[in-house]
Image 1 (tube, rainbow over the protein chains, first blue to last red):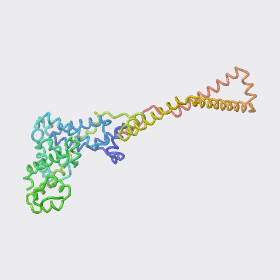
Image 2: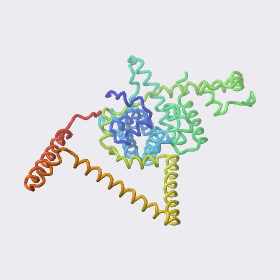
Image 3: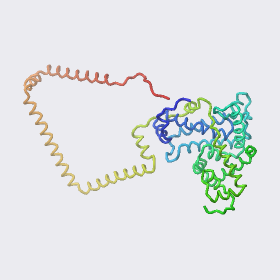
Image 4: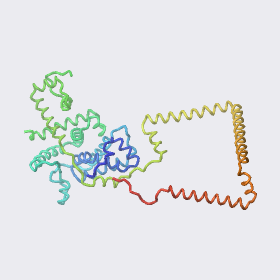
Length: 201
Length: 200
């Protein structure tokens, strides 16, 4: 990953957006660098297909950055971006019904390369081989359980506990009342606890 | 928080505890209720697992692929920037509207006043015109007097008596002036060739 220019890394999102509106390409790139992982992670866990998640992530950034002039500074840039990403995921899931997550790759993959490209990859930190295997098993179980949730529950639980967003912010992103967000998250946690109860032992 | 010690944890209370707020009444209940104790420890473990989930990384070159499809906004003119900033937020829009109303109001007031005081305006205008004309005459007269009193005035007057000589001198002066302008332009011109730009 190329080194981030020191001049932009210390700026807030609003400040970088102002620079982008002034025509600075490096400001656009800074916004992509800041949010590519969180956006891609959300979309990957929502649609459960790596290639598709990449396409949706690209579409999200392209849509947001091409409409940077219409972005309203009184809202958080990240909320706006995540809203676009979530809408893209929900639109896709409504068009296509996807079933179970596969650690071994998408069921739609036909070549070995496609299988590898769509297989869930986790545990990129420098653990030992045994750590990696154990982390993969645990992580795989958790990812599998998340994949079983309804899309609305899944989006809420990911934004809340993986991205660390506040309830109010999630409500803004998903256009849901606060009470509904809390209900979805509580229900999602209940389902996940039941699915993962065997791991607690 | 008013609650019965016997009341099981509500989802909101679980959220509070997970965020680090553990009210005494809730703690008392949890200590005495195995079900809520188990529920809370299960929730804590689940949240711990979820927050530890790694961020997935898109394939290398993601940024470049995005930028290949993005149309970077071109830098606006100063007027367009001013227009955009003036209308960016409700406060700036209110300020801009106030300024416009003030200017239009002042204009309307001055027009109305002028229409009601035409004689006064005419009188003021004539006085101003007279003063300017007098000042102009004083300046011209002063310059002419100064010129005539110069020691080289006689020689310069003699030169002007010969039209050919006058034309030659004038042509020479004009040519020198034009050459000087061209030289200045060459000296301060921005290079036309490409220069290195800072690009990330």
